[in-house]
Amino acid sequence: MLNVIDHINEGESAHSDDLYSQVVREAGSIGVPDIYTGDELKFNSDKINLMFAANVFSAKNGLDCLSEEELAAIHKSFHETETGSKEQRVARLWINSLGIPGA
Image (cartoon, one colour):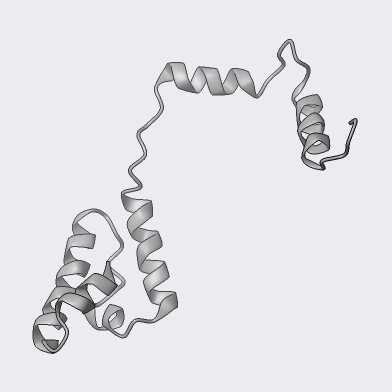
């Protein structure tokens, strides 16, 4: 997102500053913590940009909430089934992941 802003506004630093500030304002409107400034994002610090992106994803991850039926199906799959206990399934998956022939 920030790289796109840079490419759009090469040579227009005043306008670019406004865009970074606008990104921060818009992010705040979707629930991103108000701990960033446009100047911090503009200087392209990998750590700050990663933290900003993580907070945007946490605020709006695009994942739908699970329905009661989906939760029940997941819950059932983690408990005892006719194919064995959870521990047996985990052990079987682990052994299979090792790629041992004949196992």
